[in-house]
Image (cartoon, rainbow, N blue to C red):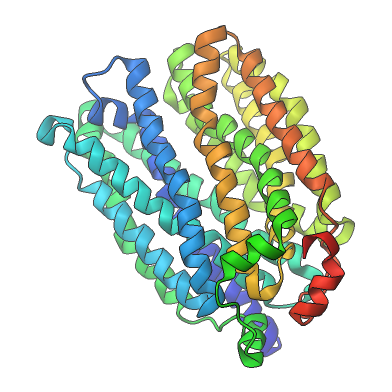
Length: 439
């Protein structure tokens, strides 16, 4: 095995472990926001409004993620990818640990939900800076013909983090009484994050800096104000990255977060139905996301991405009728197929978005386009779905919402070039000329 291949694998492994831990932290909160936080931090509200308030604190992280993308993206383009990735992992790990020791409403009153929202904001900052760096490090190392495959591995951190977080919460909730779980059991996975972060740091400190960034640094062509330059020179790339992500986010959070609210709140089913169904689908994604990334290296980013968009749009109308059967096998089928379509979109997404921007601006541009879309997509999706069902008392409205969001994604892909064959090693000026309207 050559030194270059070995280093590429080490970078991919470091990115995968780091993003898995970050998404573990992130999904711990999302799952707890539907299962625990309404009772613990909003006990004075009725169940509907308590859940709504809890999901609102969850959405705070999505507001923070673009800010994290801006701040860490700036330093990622100025001082390097590796240093920033170490910092983002620390930010996420510490904030998650502190959530685990946070007192509830019964102990400190309104200060409890205020501190909860603040720590969720800090989590969002860390994750906002994490994604761009992990994807770009994987993309910029190794064989240019395998960029889709390499960049898809940080995306695997999403299902890996979900499996870890939801799996731990599920085990704890079923091995202890409801009173014990609400009192202290839910805190264990959050406290565990403090130990896991050291594993991620140990791995990340062993990788080398991106060779493409090293070339930019050697030539002395680093951007002084990367975000300002992105806004000036890559506006259409930003628009494409933003719109291409919205539908993916909406579909994902309906399929993985709102499903918990719907099955437990509307259908009166045990929470294990939703958690186990999504766990099965997420476990399959561990293999499907890299497969989709690899297919995008062969057939192009946009064809694979669009296949996922079309599949998710169709499945949005089959998803809820299968849930309404109250049969666990059919509920699991609904979640599995939904997450298969998500994998087809999510696998090529990382390379597609990162390749829209030149090397000297890639961290800032990719992070901004990706994270701003999270506010419109992931942050609002469970809240909008909750309100739509409450108003119309029909899941058809929620399905239409998902399809409209996916239509926006299709437009974002349509206005973008195929990025698979772009030469990322070109000097920025030549790269800009080749990119045409995206320069």
